[in-house]
Image (cartoon, rainbow, N blue to C red; front, side):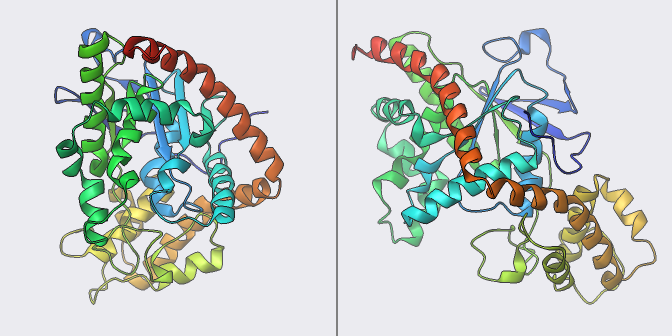
Length: 371
């Protein structure tokens, strides 16, 4: 039985489709404004692939910035795959038992947000061994300088004084394998991941030129949803790694927890509610959260805030967030109470993913001479 979509998903969302060579196509809601000669590679509406690391229960920024759009994409494309990319998580130290819990917690969170295992394929990356084999083959087509300048390596290795692991260095190649293994035509990504997707596009071209036409070049789906900022430091995005407990709202937070965090959110000395992300980032972040969780525009949010000071407005924001997240929290609690059900759903998704991946890798092995 398909799980219902939980929460009040926005009726409309905006996306930019970024393909190589660089071109931007504008879409609103369910209708793409692509012309016939701009149809995505592969025809038939294309295939979407995206992945998320099992780093615990998602937060409000994850939901509004990505997961909400993931839910909507299930109704816009005929083939959609979402992977819990546990191999990627190994680039950071992991406690094995906690990682296993995190995988199931992420599965429950995705389902509670509205990912429908009948409308899409939800699976655990490491259970499809074709990912790792294709990553090795593509890695042999990738130069070291190409990887050295990608944001993942530059940002994370700098924290380790340039001594990051080989896995961290080749992380983008595994990302490319994740995408190309399913011949995905569209990939929802944040702006910070566009360069990594361009590597996947490059590797598709390199492989096709060397071994024959095999992979479509995937396009980036860039969500226009504003990024949710930290409640304690609105100059930074909301993050699970934030050391300040009051900075991040999680999907499993109770109404009291949400109220406390929003009440303590950083604003400024001006009492009026306005939207000016440069001059008033804290208040503007609250307006963004209010508009997104209430499924209204920023202008409508400001109209509702008319005559309120920031203290009173925080109560309005809290009400919208609690209303949006309560059914999601309750569904996560229901799902995590039955770990066997979650394991069975992931096993079903893995079987479906392997049905797609196995023939692609078989063809790749034949083309490169391994079979």
